[in-house]
Image (cartoon, rainbow, N blue to C red):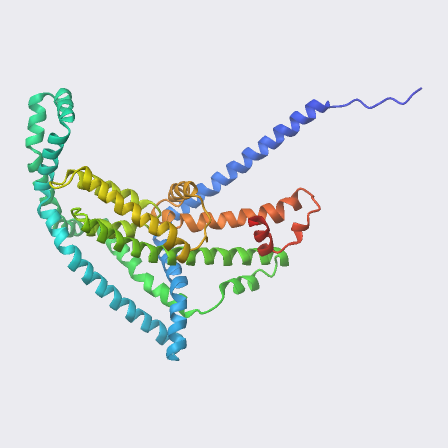
Length: 408
């Protein structure tokens, strides 16, 4: 009696289907875990934002200013505490001079802007009537001729009311805070959060230690290779944070001055104010550009002495400053530290702004994304071959060597 072949529970096709289904289920589960982690992170950051953002701000400032403290200590032969105190005095003096200069330079433009706000709105509507008559006809058709005329006549009155609201906002704020206990708590809470940043910064600067080495000593229970990889990633993240913010601050300041001078020379109303704001807001990539051009182009076109020629001059200034930033400032100051495509930068800003629930996420978007790119390179070159049981030489590389191999 011949040997009976065992009956197959699954055919080859069924096995492939089961494997594909299990793989898809695993991918869905992994995505669900990642989404859950981001949701929990968002809830955590939103709940404890009052504690986290002062720490984050102090940490970033400490990384940026530690070389300055070391320079003061080395040049003046002082200890850490006197060096930090000298840094604080210098910072206060620079801030005072900066605030005074800003108020001196912006004061006239800001006062004129708010004082002439009703006239500007009336002038804007008159300019729209003159340059876009079809738009006026469309308004008449939608709202009716009488109602539309009444709306146009009330524009100046609405502007005056808006100006009164702005003037009275400071006084009403005090009365609101006095009447609302919650408002008082919120006000003092925000004040305390800002006030605690210099305290955190002082202690972080005072602790002149290599945190990556401290982390390495604390992770004695982890495998040596994995511990080295963790330390490498921490150092990469700190390096990205420092280079990004140091570079963005310098580049933003230079671009702001260039925009301000350029817009003023081409005759744009409030050009100096708009230009400096564009440079300052570019610490969040593209934010200053979007908001600045959103103000500059309509003002340039609709101001009394403006038009297409003014818009062209404004765009010319913008293109020149962008060329200066793209071909000279960024390569010289920041190099290619992030290595991110502009499309990735835009997506990262929206993603981290949502994930971390606010402006802190938008500010940290580029460093966080660049860090995860470095992490992915390490995992792809070193750990994926190990998980797939491939006899790959890269699995024995250090984290730094694996990152270099992936870049190459």
